Figure (tube, rainbow, N blue to C red):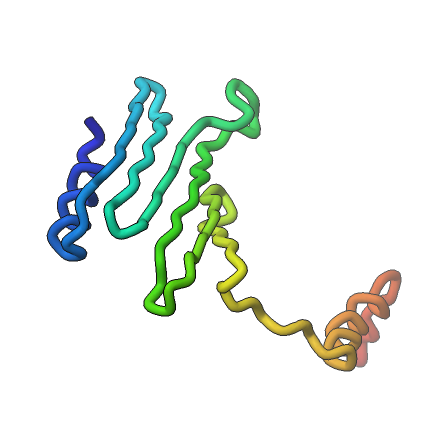
Length: 125
């Protein structure tokens, strides 16, 4: 049994007063795993860790998962995520995103790169 899942389940029951109504887990010798659970208050969690590009120079461990819960407003909120060499990357319709960069700011950031290629430094003696 995955110790982290057991601890998380115990904390969830203690803090939320919810009970686990469904739970599955699988732990493999290579470090990969898969688990899921659902609680009586509507929380659903699913996660898996696996090796991507096994046996190559690009081999890496990847975690993918999702969770959902019922918010105070009665809406169901769902988050999907990936965690890999690029860090934790969540996505969900309720997660705020950065506004687009204004056009003038974008052009000012692109300008130096577009005008320095092939240019030599001027040396003043």
